[in-house]
Length: 197
Length: 197
DNA sequence: CTAAGCCTACCGACTAGTAGGTTTGCGCTC
DNA sequence: GAGCGCAAACCTACTAGTCGGTAGGCTTAG
Image (cartoon, rainbow over all chains, first blue to last red; front, side, top):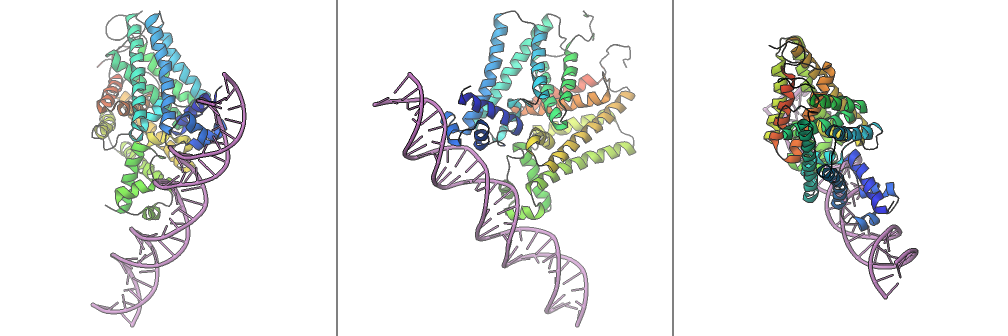
């Protein structure tokens, strides 16, 4: 594992736990066991480091979007993959919060370039979610009660809110509980018109 | 308005926008137009100032709880009062984020006493919500699909998540949109058994 | 020979917090 | 009512430590 990758990993963890203004080059240097100046060699400014972390995440979402466009995929499994990923991360405390969610809450005091990157992450994620929900609705797996874009943003909100809740209570299972509720709501609940399985 | 109140107001706003580690005594001093040392006179340490802000919020919730216990109240109106309050705050940018939500995301790097105060805020709020939802369900105003405590935490999550979303998009109406969806879900949606109005 | 990678040593700006002096206003006694 | 005492409020001036960032030198691999 290269130093650059180690720096990104460390920065990601620190941002997730303490936020952008809550971590310093000194913290990263201590974790990775290099000197502060060496970090500047890879990432000239703090904003560059943080932005690289966000872009890394965006890359992963981008991959998934491309996969969906090219081949067959299971909407339900996709969504479960997303929530399951965070359930695991939060449960084992390896990543107790989405890095973009953390940065979003500090958005107003972030360097503009970094802020833009965070906004793009949210746009990417909600678009991905919208696609998954739309496909799921077409196949009769999900029941949407309003526009797919609105449902996507609601679901996203619940997931991010559940992260805050789990952290506030120090109980990872709170996340699971809330997210499972949101998931159940999307699955067939024989409402209104007659279109049960 | 006393200096102490001005300091609390300023600190509240700064925490909401920048977080605990993102604001300094110098920022507060500039806003209130006093010297840094004067802030220390009222609040010896930064944690004391932040804690006082959180406790102020807790006091307001506490009042509402006591009001509910003593006299008749309208659960729907209570809930609409809560969400409406934040809609207004976010729309006019006077308070773009709940102070406890902001601090919760930084919880791991907060002084213990302050962290405890934040945890208590969440406990208070979810208990209040649970009471409102339970009363509303008894009167047939709300339809709960799982335990009141779970519904309360889900609703809370959605509200906090919607704050993040609105901030990330820079669009206050996103908050309204998501929260209205959550509200609609609680109101009578003729599901399962036959108990429509 | 070059360039990437990492280092030591430093910079000015800012951090929370402290020491100690000055101002202000209120209650008490002559 | 004048003078006194006292405490709250606010100030200037300072501390030690940390912040992000820079300059420039050393080492190593191609």
